[in-house]
Every structure is written in C-alpha cells, then in structure tokens.
Length: 101
Image 1 (spheres, rainbow, N blue to C red):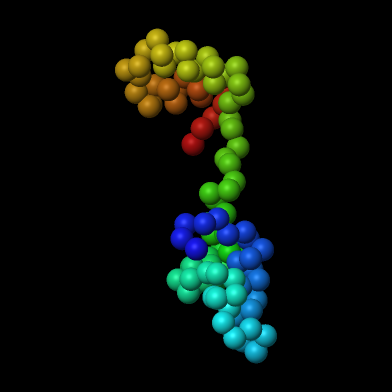
Image 2 (image 1 turned 30 degrees about the vertical axis):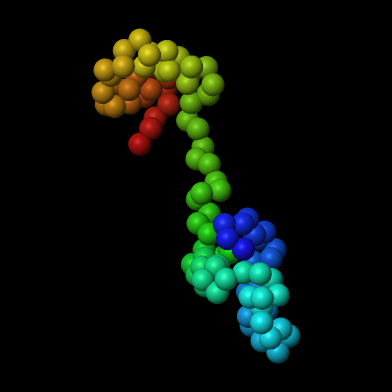
C-alpha cells in the first residue's frame, strides 16, 4: 500500500495487535501496512496521544476579527500594499479594538 489513506481505526487496531503478538502472526501482511508506517504511528501515539499526529494541524486558531473587519482590512491592503506589519497591527489594534499579541 503506497501512499494510501489509512483510517485512524486501522492504525489503532494495528498498534493494539502489536501488543498481543499471539493474536496475529504477521500484522503487517494482514492489514497491508509497512513496518515503517507502524513505527511512525507508534511515535505519534507516544508523542501526541493519537496515531494521527500533531493535533495543531487539525485545530484552527480563534479569529480576533469578524468577517466585516477582515474585508475592511483586505480592502486597505489592496489599496496600500506597501503597509508594514507594524502599521497593520496598529490599525487592527486601534481602529478595530482587537488587541493582537
């Protein structure tokens, strides 16, 4: 199986079976996965608590600006593309009353 999407359930089942080798002689052949993939899933599980990997990939940051404010900021940037990041930060902080660190 090269570059195939493997479900989270299959990955978790594979890691479970690794802990019980008497249940299955050749887990890799039964589930059609490579040993390298299983090592990667185990590392993810040990490091992040999930076989899927880094949780920040799946979570979005909270937006500080609403849709109207974003449209207004986009229009300002289109009309003046040479604005510096500091100037954009000041505009957001002062005119939109949305503090950004």
